[in-house]
Image 1: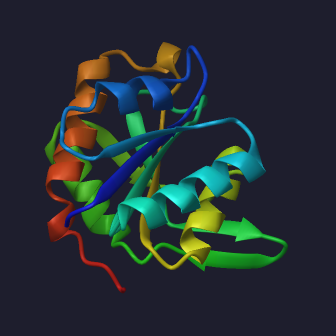
Image 2: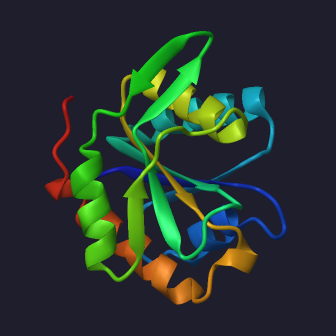
Length: 161
């Protein structure tokens, strides 16, 4: 899969920003502001400008430790959108690179869910991965390796689009 955008949210101590910046796999990196409208506008504009084929969004989930949550859905005003990307394969790839993972039951109600919903609504192949907050990551290198491994194998992830 080519033309990948990897995105995380801004914030000095935000693990999604930190991991996004540390990724060495070739992709377009985008740090989104913590503002629903501005972040959606920025991401959708970048998808068009880069002619992206896939978006991987990282968000911070403070209540998990040393594992990645694969988010299958986003909700807004009673509407639920599902990722076209195979979450089971996504989980397997992440675990193959040494990080525990699970398929989540909800992307939350804040910035993460909002940006994921807007990205899915655009019709692009998109997946949202929640990573722990900085204090809940025992070894950042493991999370970084898992995300890099996933990005390197994105072409192997079945998509419905």
